[in-house]
Amino acid sequence: MSRDLRKYTSQTNIRLIIGAFILLFVIGLGLIAIIYGTGAALVGLLCLLGALVPISLVALLMFGLDVFVKKINKD
Image (cartoon, rainbow, N blue to C red; front, side):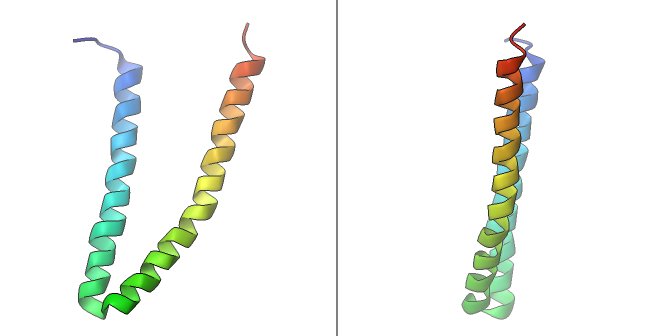
């Protein structure tokens, strides 16, 4: 068993992000559907997907900057 802490941290962060999305989409939309109905759940899904657009744009920008900085600092 290796002790690569960077890999462990990366895996843990990815698992936390996936878990948060599962909680948000499955549990959150499920509760909306149970309490308010399926129409409200569909609107909630639309709102969640709309909120993901700026979040994904910022994440893509940060990833691009990371690649750019690593390419410049090859020293």
